[in-house]
Every structure is written in structure tokens, then in C-alpha cells.
Length: 153
Image (cartoon, rainbow, N blue to C red; front, side):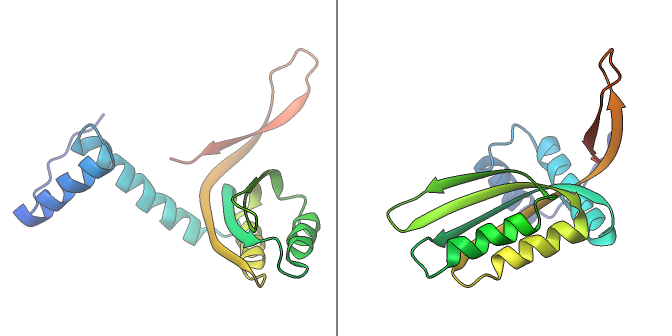
């Protein structure tokens, strides 16, 4: 592991220490590692729309709104190749939270997420993307192959 020293103005250091406390980091180093990973991941995703990713798309919608649930379901079916799993939670009598775990080309995942978030009545949509390297491997004696998605950071 490589070490480096960093100098911060007192106000910035104090604000960073407050951030560390709020996020329950045990030390500054771990907080810095996460901030660096997040910055690098954001850059990686922005630069490589053709690369692969794993993503979580979460959104809230009112299931009473006319045809909304049907539109969301149809959009998912039209992109079934991207969806690994979905979870549906009833928040109250009207609102539902859905989270979809997606895998595919970054650009296609982003387009799909945008199409869901753009459906009238969908609220609080958020997409979290992790760029991955995909490999096909076999661990079984029969030689059955499957894919691994390894995060790049």
C-alpha cells in the first residue's frame, strides 16, 4: 500500500472530519479511499458508454396513476436483457418503490433508466452505476460457463 501526505486548510479539515463522523468512517484514510474510488468511477462511467456495468435503478411511483404500472412493466419487458432482478415494495396505499438490478452496456443501461424515470408519475428516480470487466469462466468439472462482472475499482 502506498502512503501519501495531504495538507488541508483548517476549515476544510474540520469540515472533512465532520463528514467522516457523519458517515461513520473509522479514519480519514478510508474516507479518502472512498472519495477517490467514487471520483474515478464517475470518470470511468462518463468516458466509456460502451463499457459494461452493473447498476441499481430505484424509483417511486403512485400505482393509482392511470396506466403507470403498465407502462413501467412494458418498459422493463422491452429491455428484459438488461434486468437481472427487481424488487417491489408497497410504501403505503398509493406509493410503490421499485429497485431493478441491471447489467449491460453503460449507454444502454443509462438509456433504459432514463426511459423509466421519464414516465409520467415516476418520482425520485436514481441510477447508481459501477463499471465492470466481464469475463466468461468455468468452475465446474462439466465445463459449464458463466460470466463474472468484476468491478474496476
